[in-house]
Image (cartoon, rainbow, N blue to C red; front, side, top):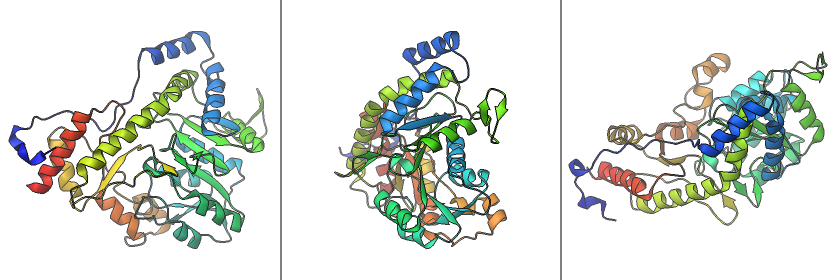
Amino acid sequence: MKFGETRLNEKKVQNIPLGCPVFDEEMEAAAVNALRNERFVLGEDVFKFEEEFARYVGAKFAVSTSSGTNALQIALLSLGIAMGDEVATSAFSFVASANAVLHAGAKPVFADIDAADFNVDSEQLRLKVSKKTKVLLPVHLYGYPCKMKEIMNLAEGHDLWVVEDACQAHGTECFGRKAGATGDVGCFSFYPSKNMTVCGDGGMIVTNDEGVAKLAAKLRDCGRKTQYEHDVIGFTSRLNTVNAAIGRIQLRRLDGWNRKRVKIASLYDELLSDLSGITEPPKPSLDVKPVYHCYVIRTRERDGLKGWLQQRGVQCGVHYPLPIPLQPVYRRLFGYQPGDYPVSERASSTCLSLPIYPDLSDDSVAFVCGLIHDFFNR
């Protein structure tokens, strides 16, 4: 495809969104059935969704929650995390990864990332482990898996729990195991931008530890021992039945949607491969199967390229413009300063998410890539 043959002023502006959640007649029918025939809260579809999601991930148990943030918080509390404990995690993620640690009463301690894949650098993580550390919390960012073998070895050497933040990694695989199934606990989000959603907020905890699962289920439901007897301080963090009904349909579609995402990412890779001004995201391998929650390129001209594309109808995203330690609230609480996490800071200033969703056409991908070529050839 010879992009240079088309003059920019001859290109038509297209409306290409960054993402496009799916809600169709089958999901609508499932939602209406749940509303008409089940309890609105903790109805039959909730428990079926949990069973099906656990089976999909390869875990023994799953406990649904009202959000991915709640899933992380409750997972940590279910492991006994308390005031004075530390949780080592990535400096580069959505702020909820660290907020959940604070909500659980512990302190997040940040490690810088690997420049190659945006995920936490296991060596930097090792340097953050102290006598107060109780949990390692790796984040599978953008649907690309962390180096879990190295992280699990680190955890075993220091007798630490591992909680996987798989909120962007539904279906991601590494060495034959799905994200969320390697650590002690895995947590997922079903926010509308994810690879699968419940058409609202929602989350899931997966684990092979029955005790952790039972406590998590209690914590998400007001700490109930019986209907009006409570033996722990819990939360109102349940997943609504109607959302679970939609989630069950979406889960059945997930693998097909992920295959389409991988195909779209491969086309982006091909059409952008000749540009020296950008760095493409890490690619799949025999052992690593990303699901491209986001397709993230890096360029020093990020802001200019973002504006160029958006002016021509192509929505873009910046995930994320600030590392968590440089968020105003974290600077105020802990005194972090620019320069503390240099690799994360470079990623924040150069990363750009391009449109990707299962129904994105090849022609739309070519249109986006053509505009990117025009920007660098201008």
